[in-house]
Image (tube, rainbow, N blue to C red; front, side, top):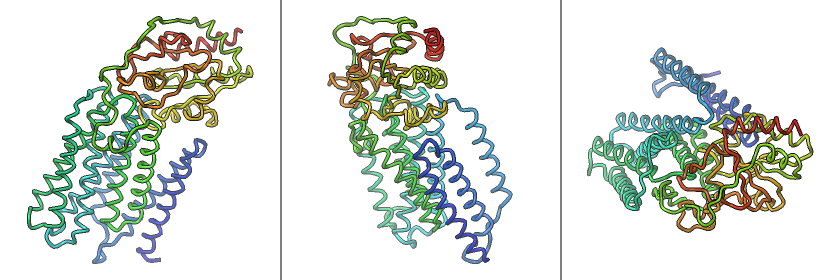
Length: 468
């Protein structure tokens, strides 16, 4: 069998495993196998490229020692990072890895630009190269800022002027791109490269800077789709089917997820792109109004309410991840189920700091996937729910999203926990959530506050339940 046939066969296997792996990711039961399957397919495609690829003159790939050394270093670093990362830092890690993918796509475009005659190459081919550079750079710089914001090292910049600046930057990027591709004699290749690199980097930074609070998961999803698109352009450049397939799958899946999340959040995708998405966390408004009474509840009373309830809904949030309380939360839920209580987990589409954060967190604790119910399915049943237990969620259960037009989260669909018969909030303090605004729910007549560390509180609740 010739090297070319073996190469194409490895690409075919890689493409098929990507598709099957993505399909398997749609279920928590098969997600792990799907991830491993897609990784194995990628490994086959890499090995096939290294050993079977030939250039136009029939030469094999050289510098194998450098290639394998780089792969070894990357594997060790990636493995150590993945094994050591805490669940609370998972969004930062996702953003970091996504940024690295965008940087790789941009570097590929830079290398290709230096290996082609700017004035002689096909305009359409040069367009693909430059698009890979622009999108990859935006993904990289935007992901770096997203990493810093998720790690709370970079603060939001809230200015309406940024909207117009971002629109101007986009116009400049496309203007320079059009001149560079279709009138190459007008501008030198080096000048075009540095202009597009600088403008794309600046746009990536500025379009993420004003985004804050509950809107960050949507941005991570959008940046992920950018990286996929940039990788797809790399597949076009190298006529590489597996790179093209992988990029298209990531780009399309990320785009679909972004659109779905925007719909769920009642936001506009255009606002995400121009950088006026979400309003910042420190925006005015959103403070609690009216009755400011905080009603506390004891552990014993909480356990009794839950034990004798017919239906209990648990609303997880980022605080659950911070406390590493997912396992004891699962034990608490199992104790209630054994008593005949109907229990579910109410999942808001942007709970946590990245898309699917709560799903991953609860899957780690072996919570049965059917128990995870999406917001649109939970809300209609809340009036018939006896007790809602909120563990670490804040902005996604804030009534201000519905009744306070001055709030930065106004218009965002939330889980309407206040419609349940009793709401119990497990929280360390009255501190505001990620959006930086006070939660009106804490002062609602149906709400009872159970202060303390979530893990410690749930552990004590489990003990109280066993004593009833």
